[in-house]
Length: 233
Image 1 (cartoon, helix red, strand yellow):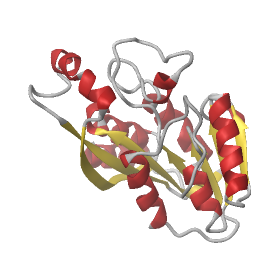
Image 2 (spheres, one colour):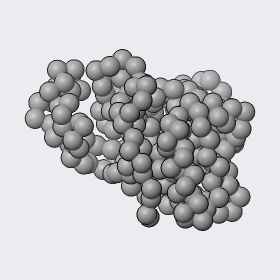
Image 3 (cartoon, one colour):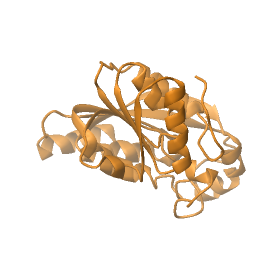
Image 4 (cartoon, one colour):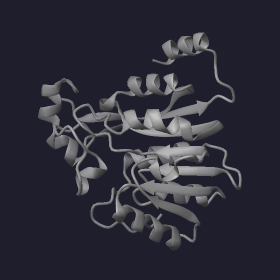
């Protein structure tokens, strides 16, 4: 898929590919309401729109929003692209499918970068700056039986995401895994990763995973929910 990608917008990489493959396995009927958060170039929203979905996308970066809009036009897809912080642009809306490829790379700085390329990947010392927010905010957006597809690195706490989504009432499981070598950003941080205990000495690759989480059509009793949380953690 040919895409316009201005400087500062995340380039589709291995995590994007893994999430696209997972999206391809989902049943998308015409009119299904989809949302792509942290959309970047808009590639996932475009993929959903090409299959007939009513696609919405959002990003905090104004440059990414412009790129996603242009890419949707380039591919003759109808995608509603919104500008704002995570779920704020779609407050009060509900979706049948939500995809997210968020920043998840551990970084020494405690907060998110205000601007620049690092905004697309830096996510605090444990890599969970956005992931924790997603696990709290996205379940509210899901329609009954709605699906969340979330991609992240093994360095940023897969078990923590599974447990947090479970506490939000979602049925969760890992549906895709892929090992890939560290890219330039992560390779440069290996010494820091080792000092933080995020990777064993000599580590040169990471595991990417896609988590699939489904909202139950009814709220589960707390005793059952607690049991299921222990099973997926």
